[in-house]
Image 1: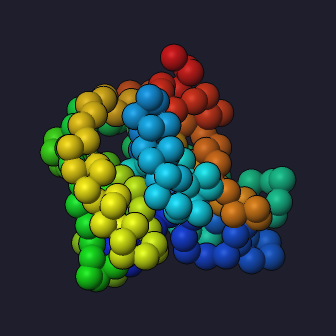
Image 2: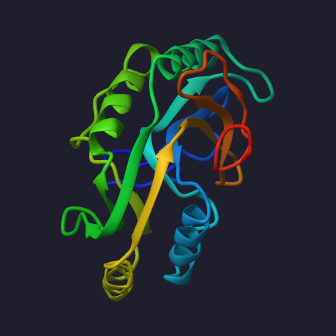
Length: 213
């Protein structure tokens, strides 16, 4: 997940892969559904970004966060977080996102992203609710929802990414959000889907809707 909307990008950035001994590294994000997500991930790879295959295309809600929990077992802290996410999803509603063109955090941070023309308010509302309770923390930058397409690359590649995606457009409905975990191999993988209007979480079932459709 994007840890601070400018300085670090993820879910691949943040604490070390897999967390320290006895901890796990998680994040929460809105997945970008296919074909949009796959196209943007391929674009990211074409720019030479080594994180392209390790980070599913997403809009961050919670940046990389270490939680208690031994490998293969959910700790009490993670259980409380999942219950927190379930309650938020149950009382939320779907909203529309329109992606339009590219933006950048340079010179503050070497990041190029696809910008949101619609849905910023929905992302901000959900992010504020998610980052409360067991996930409450301060961020070094104001929250700025976006879709990263290049990060920590040479300037000429960041320029190319910015130009290539300047005319990009995509529209989709946000069905909910997903809980991700950072593996010891450096790859972020979705673990649970939390669908808006539902009180239960289910195993991840794809980048479209939680039922895999």
